[in-house]
Image (tube, rainbow, N blue to C red; front, side, top):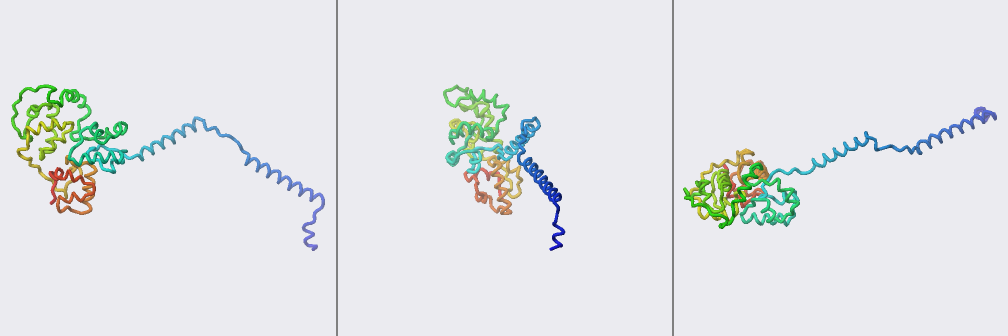
Length: 300
């Protein structure tokens, strides 16, 4: 006991000193604690530096949101699929109306006709119509000059009288622009458009291909077909589907970018098409266009 007593025995002055030291430590710790947890300093967030930094963050967020939006490329509205239509914001009813119309083997040739068939709203039409790419796309700088002439080309027989023109042939694949202009309702713009599309097709193989000419009304096309027929079918050099390149396949008048990808994906899966009819096995392949597409393709 004497050993422990020698170590813990303090006189009065020593005890007072220890007490004061402990008290000082408690006071200092209290000040530190209060200072940490009662720091109510307000940071001014309206400084030019912080505002500029926040604006930079907001602009980067806006760019990221814009980059995440699906890109829309020019496309032919005649070949809109369920998936494509949903991406564009079309309802199932609007897509079904388009598909039902296409099953009649007819084509849409203007944004107005697209709206009449699908019943899409004006707001949606204004968003997607700038991406419409119809056959024989007419460049914008020529549209203004053509529109004035097209407005004068009436679609009724009594709008104006044409002078008697002696046609050089009744073969639609050999007829000249002047021959087509002998038909009431066909002016220089439409006659040139027919010939240009005929060149793109390498010649009309089916009478109803005339209905595919952009902007040509069915009644006027019927008048043309009442005079001009296919006397000789064109000789089209077919390309091997197993060796054709992507850009070359895109030149097919009836193959758009999406269909071209599907054909190449299918070709990669099967390694080689044994028969051109295998194209019908491709999911989403437009069977109604098969006879037209294979005018330019073969399997070897």
